[in-house]
Structures are given as C-alpha cells and as structure tokens.
View 1 (cartoon, rainbow, N blue to C red):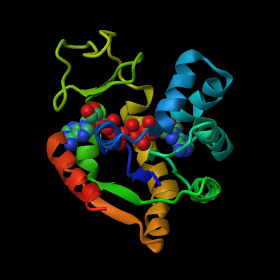
View 2: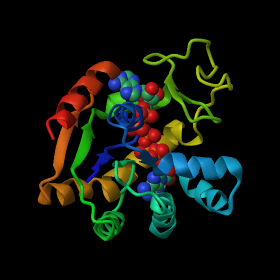
View 3: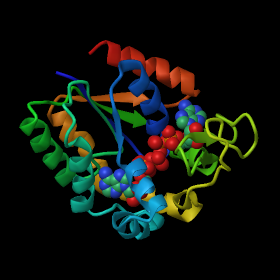
Length: 217
Ligand code: AP5
C-alpha cells in the first residue's frame, strides 16, 4: 500500500512548499487542488472559468467541481505509491467522499498533517509570495527570493502575485478556513490520524520537523 497523506492548514502556512519536498523525497505524487484549479484558470477551460470567480473572492469552489477534479486525477493511476493531498479536502463532505474513494481503491489514510502558524506570520508569508504563472513554482520576496528578481528560477517566466493574495482576499480566505475547513481537525482527530506540525521558522527547519514526523510512520 502507498503512503496516503493530507496536508491541512490555513492558507499561506507553507503546505505547498513542503509538499514539493515530501513528494520528491518519498516519491509520492502530489495532488494540489489549488494548482489544478489555477491550471484550469490559466488555460481558460470551462471548469477554470467557473472556478475563477470563487477563487478571486477567496471562497471555496463548490464540492462537486472539486470532487470531479480529484476523481479525474486519480482515475487511471494505480495508486501504488499513494498520494499527497495538498489543500484537499477542505470541507467535511469532501473528506467523506475522499474516504469512500480511498476505500474503493483499497487504500486508507496514513496521516493528516495539520500545519500550525500564527496569523501574523501567515499574512507575512502571503503578502510576499510570488508565483510563476507557467510552471507554478512558488517564491517569497524575503524567505525564498528568486535568483533574478521577478523571474522564475525554473523557466525564466515573469513572476506574478496571485489575485487572491491581496489583503482583503487573504482576510476572506482565513475566515473561510476557520468556518469550513478547521472542523476537519477534529474530524481527523476522531480517526486518530492527525498530527500537528509547528510550521514556524525557516523552510528548512520546518522540513526537518516534517521529515522526522513522516519517517516515524
Ligand atoms: P490553494 O492554492 O490550495 O491555497 P491555500 O490553501 O489557501 O494555500 P496557499 O497556496 O495559499 O498556501 P500554502 O499553505 O500552500 O503556502 P505556500 O507553500 O505557498 O487554494 C486556492 C483557492 O482555490 C482557494 O481559496 C479555493 O477558492 C480554491 N480551492 C483549492 N482547493 C479547494 C478545495 N479542496 N475545495 C474548495 N476550493 C478549493 O507558502 C506561502 C508563502 O510562504 C510562499 O511565498 C513561500 O515561499 C513562503 N514560505 C513557505 N514556508 C515558509 C517558511 N517556513 N518560512 C518563510 N516563508 C515560507
């Protein structure tokens, strides 16, 4: 059976950054619903067009759209290596449907890692984030600056700030997280699969803490 992990936590806490490293280290495919949605928006697919309005307001994209995306992504894979879900599930119905999906694939969850960070630091991380619109690489003006200012290290494309990283939208996303996603902490505690991770400090320090936790599984 593969390693099936969920990275849970508020926006900007560093889930995506750590998911890259864990996916490469354990050779587990990463499935980020945020990345899949942004790909759809960039390509102008019907799904992307529908999702964009919700994302720009900082609201969650409706569950049926998300579950369709996840099912498409999982279809045809043998799941031997498992999956690292980043930013999914985000509501109790999504979590229930993921459980049913994993069961149908004779898989189960190994661990849900909940990233914990102060609100002040979350806002600092989001306000300095810069993204590559082409390859989705993520930078930060202070903590992970690109080699050439404003340019992606991987593909040279000009970096942008995500629409939903504007201060008003960040506020909205944090409220949405508290109301709709935070209940999943208790949900997974009840299943004895939740571990909290102190997400403060430099990227490397968080990575070491996370690797130690995952290696002990
Ligand atoms: P999504 O893309 O999933 O956004 P999110 O959960 O809000 O998470 P972020 O990508 O903002 O943050 P992150 O925790 O990955 O942090 P990162 O590593 O980038 O979702 C976007 C939208 O899509 C949602 O609002 C919703 O509309 C929709 N959506 C997606 N999934 C959905 C679902 N399942 N259901 C419904 N709707 C859905 O780090 C942040 C910054 O900090 C970066 O600049 C990074 O370089 C820097 N950084 C990282 N770690 C550190 C560190 N230790 N020290 C200093 N800086 C750091």
